[in-house]
Structure formats: C-alpha cells, structure tokens
Amino acid sequence: MKKKIAILGSTGSIGQSLLNIISRDKNNFKIELVTANKNYKKILKQAKAYNIKNIIITDKKYFHIAKLKKNRKKINIYNNFDSLKKIFPKKIDYVMSSIVGIEGLYPTLDIIKYTKKIAIANKESIICAWNLISRKLKKFNTEFIPVDSEHFSIWYALKDKNIHNINQIYLTASGGSLLKTPYSKYKNLKLNQILKHPNWRMGKKITIDSSNLMNKVFEIIEAKKLFNLDYNKLSILIHPKSYLHAIIKFDDGMIKLIAHDTTMEIPIFNTLYSDNYKVIKTKKLNLQNLNNLNLQKVNKIKFPLINILKKLPKNNSLFETVLVASNDELVKLFLKKKINYSDISKIMIKFISQREFQKYKKIQPKSIKDIIKLNEYVRFKINSKHIYI
Image (cartoon, rainbow, N blue to C red; front, top):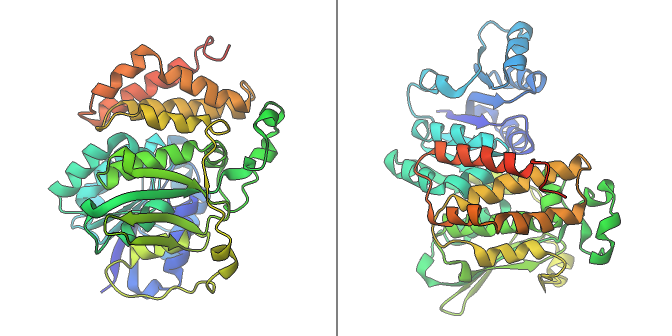
C-alpha cells in the first residue's frame, strides 16, 4: 500500500529535495497535499508531475491566478489550512513541514492531528512554540523527527541511547562566508561577499544568519527544547567543511561523531524511511575531510551574537519569539541597505536587552495567538525610526 504524505512548503529547497527523493520511488508514495505561498507556477507543475489532487496557495492573489491557470479539473485548490479536515478524512502517514518563517507556525500545529509522523524543518515553530507542538504530538500520538542536519544527527545518534547519559553535545558551524574575513573589515562588506557560503546553497536570510552564527544560536535553542537538555550541555564548534554535524559525549566516556555529505537529501531521506530499511546513493567516505576536521572554538569577539546564549531562560518562553522576530527584521533592514552588516548584531543585543522584552523570559506562550501578537509588536518596534540611529 502506498504511503500517503503531505508537503507544507513544497516549492522551497526542502520540499523540492523531498520530491526528488520521491521521484525515485513513486510507486510507494501518494502525495495528498502540497502547499505554497506565491509560487503557483511551480506548484501546478508539481501537481501535474506527481498527480497531486490537493493544493493550498496562501497568497490570495496567486490563489485566484492558480484557479484560472489550472489545467486539470480534478485539482482542488484552497487558500488556507481550514480545508485540512476535508483533505484528510483519515490520518496520513507522513508530513514534511518546511514553510519558511513564522508563517509556518499555524500550519505545523494544525496538521499534527492528521498525520502519524511529522518531520519539521521550520525553525520558528520549534523555537517559539515547542511547548504547544509537543503537547499536540502527545495528544494525537504523532511521531516527530527533526530535519535540520544537526538535530537530525543528534536524533539519529540517540535512538538507542538514554538521553540522561549525555555529558555534552557539540553542534558544528561552518563559520559561514566570513570565517576568514577579519572583524575589522565588516563595515565595508558587500552583500555578494556575505552570500557566498562555501558549502551550502541557501537563501539570503539563512546565509546571513550563518555568517554571524545567529543560525547556530537558534539551533542551540532548538536542541535544548527537542532533547530536553540544559544549555550547559550544549556547545558550538567551528568546522569549516560542514562534514561533521554533531558530536555527542556520553557519561560512560564514549563519543559519537555524526557526519554526512553536505546535502539535505540525507536527513530528509532518513525521516521519510525511518521505519523501514532503504538505501540512498551517497559519495564514498571523505577521508580528506575526516583527516582535516579543523575543529575550533567560536571567537566570541568576531561572533558576538553567541553571547545571547548566556542570557536565555531555562524554560519555554515568549523571549524566543523576541529573538526570532527581531533578527528577521534586522536582516530585512540590512538587505534594504538601511543598516550595515555589523549593525545586525549590535542592534540585536541592545534591543533584546531592553526591560520591556526581558520580561518575556518569565512568560510561557499559552497559545499561538500569544506568539503571533508579540511577533508583530517586535517587528513594529524594530522598524520604528529610532531603532537604527
């Protein structure tokens, strides 16, 4: 029997990688739903190529255009996620949640009840709403697997281990495009320099987050929540080749190193086939990378955003939403050339240290509305005319 699956954010890089994997094994899968925001052309092509019956396009303009452009009468095109109950009369087997940004919160939470397994690539959902997600996972008995290469690597390594026996987990960071650039030259950086990531092909936002290690701050927060660990058991090491993704040291003295090629197809493949054995074609073991891991401690002067980790609350809180929203808006301001690259970290640290935002460390999100409301307020404050003077 074919496995029934859904892909939230099918036109993005994660969604397309998943479709590439499925294309090599079409006889074993039936895609019940794909979603996009604006890219109606690509999603209609996907519907045709994979014989997909249901599509959600959340942007109203492009939803109406898609309705006019569709060339198959049997395609159902919806404009929001209220249609999930109609699309899924029974639980499906697998969902990939890969909608980028805070917009992925509602869909991720809404679809948990309709699937046996969910793989989440949406950082914002985990960072801002993990207590809400974990509650729903338990309520509807839905299995969860993280997709990020670092968190998948940890999950993979811990499958047969007691989480209480962990001594330390190290997440690796490439150091991004500016690893070899002196901090003194940051003021004169050009955008194309920052966007030249040495190992990964990614969008502008995540490439910038990689260059100043804000992405690694978020990944430490994710790891703390996903594996229920204290922050003092989580560390970051610079590993320029991005071949090694995590190191786990156990209390019994044993150490696990988890490595794979710099392609997201490997963790995505393993989330899809986690319950049965399947072979993926990969490159031979890279001895050159293994012999030259070149692991380094993080230079906190060059990467000042790492210092945020010392100021994080122990429990789930709305402060994580402050971090996500403020960083998003500061990166947007940089891309619009309203602030310099080095201003991202300077303003970020100053902004989140304000008393009105520090109070959110003691407030846990009770509903997704709490997160959305605070997200909008933080973005408004960042865009006020005084914030980057």
